[in-house]
Image 1 (tube, rainbow, N blue to C red):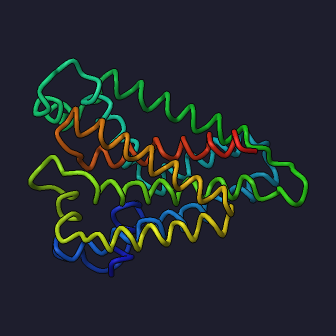
Image 2 (image 1 turned 135 degrees about the horizontal axis):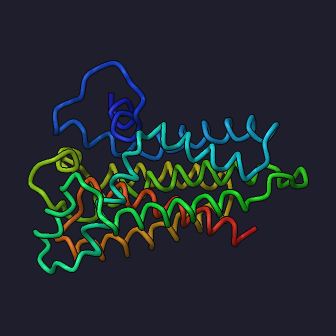
Length: 250
C-alpha cells in the first residue's frame, strides 16, 4: 500500500486501491527512491529503443516528453510556482506563498521552466550514445540515477525542513514521518547508486544531499517552509544537477 501511495503521489499512472489516512502516508516516503528507480528504468528502456532509429538529440527530447507524461507535469508545475514566489519582489513569506497558490504562471515561472528543461535536455543530449562496450551503459545509468536521486531528494526535504502550511498533501506525508523512514530510503538510494556507478554513485548521493540542503535552507528563508510546489522544484533541479555531474565526470 505504501509503495502504491508513493506511485500515486509521484506519477500520473492510474492505480487501483485507495489513499490511506494522513498518518499512514508517511511510510510511502521510504519508497520514493524505488519509484524513481522504476521511472529511470522505463526511461532507459525507451532510450534503447529510440536510439535504434533516432539520433541522440531527438531521442533525448522524446525522453523528456515521456517523463512529462509519466509525472503528469506535476514537478514542472511546482517548479514554475516556486520560481514565481521565490523570485518575486515581495518581502513577506505569506505574500510569496500567496503568489505560488495563484493558478496563473508568471514570468519567473516561465523562465525557470524553460531554462531548466533546456539544461536537462542539453546535458542528456550531450551524453554520448555510441561508446566502447565497457561504457555503453552511460546514458542508461544517467537516466536511472537522475530519476532515483531526484525522488530521494524530495523524501529528504520532506523530513529535513518544516512545511509552510498547516494542511495540504505535503502535510499529510509529514504527519507521522519518522527519521527511520528517511534512513531506510537513503540506504536504498545508496545501494542503487553504488550498484549502478560504484564510488561515483556514492559521491553523487553526497552531492545531491548537499544541494538539497542548500536549496531547502534558501526556500525556508524566503517562504518560511516548504510546500508541495517546492518539492517538485527540488526534483527538477536535482535531475539537472545529476545529468550535469555525470556529463562532467565522463
